[in-house]
Every structure is written in structure tokens, then in C-alpha cells.
Image 1 (cartoon, rainbow, N blue to C red):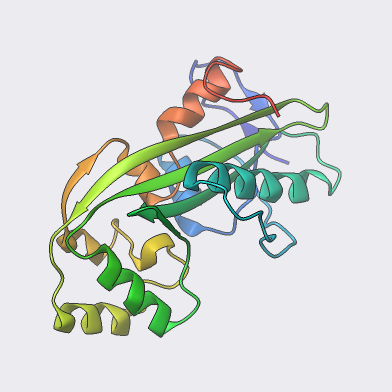
Image 2 (tube, rainbow, N blue to C red; image 1 turned 90 degrees about the horizontal axis):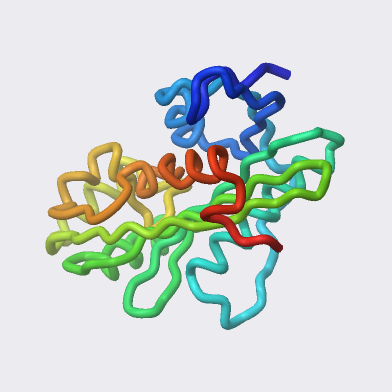
Length: 206
């Protein structure tokens, strides 16, 4: 297990930081801000959640289940889980299962101001838990049918909440981002720093 050597305050290392995600985007974000960590993909499919959960609670719950699945492998923690969802007009959108669903999502988001919400969970073997979420508002211009077809053909939508990746070529569809950009990519670094630097200040005890 490698050591977390650069956190909110230099010299305040946190041993055993584990990213419970196979997402290359989350891994890259942590590396860009100087974290050293291990990566362990959650050994489970996403669970079915109760109907009626709003977007933020759904994102937090899925982040928690990911982190818990990795922690149960016998790690000390902290284990970091994250899940990103998109919400538009009261509807929660996750990752598309296929091209048809990705096309439907892009048409739904075209010309909207929608929410991108990432839930994060930090879990320790001691039972300590910090859970929170970040919301960013993204405004998209109208996307033409030809642009949708081109983007679907690019395969960038695979594994992306809302069927688009702002850090890749889908940024050409976006006219405004209100809030954390890293949140839209898949991991709200500002929230993570607050949780690690001031335990409990931005999280909910479960």
C-alpha cells in the first residue's frame, strides 16, 4: 500500500488512501493534485436503490456502496468511493447502457441547464464515515442531430454520466459551468479537501 503524501496541509500524510473506482478520470484528478494512492475497483455491480431517492442521495448512496465493498476486502482505509449522476427536469440520469440510451440522454440534455452531482464517501475500518456531495450546474447549447450522431460514433459517451465527457470533445456543447469543474469530470476535489482537512465539516454521519 502506498502512502498519501500531499494533502490539504503539507506533512499531514494519510496512510492507506484507496480509490474505490476503476475510473481513469478520477485517478487522473487525484494524481494531478499530488495524491499518491492505491486503486481497487469495487467487486460488485451497482445495487438497486429504493425509488424516490433524489439525485444527491442516490449519488451518495452509490459512492458509499462502492467504498464499503472495497473496505470489506480487509483494508484499514480511508477508502474513497465516488459516483456521478446528472439531473434534468427532475429526472436522474446515470450512465448509458448502449448507443440508443446515450442518444436519448444527449437529446434530453440538449439546450438545458442541468445539474451534475457527485457523491463521495470516505470510510475507515474503525467505522468512521464521511459522506457528502457536490453540485455543479452545466448549461448546454442546442445540439444538432448530426452532432449527436458524430458524438455517438466517437464512443466518448461510454461509462459517462449523462453520456458526455466535458474534459474531452463534449466541451464544445457546453456554454457555461457554474461550480466545480472537477465535479463534472467525476470527482469534486474541493469537497474532498474539506472532508480530509476538517473531518465532519462537509459530510454527513451515517
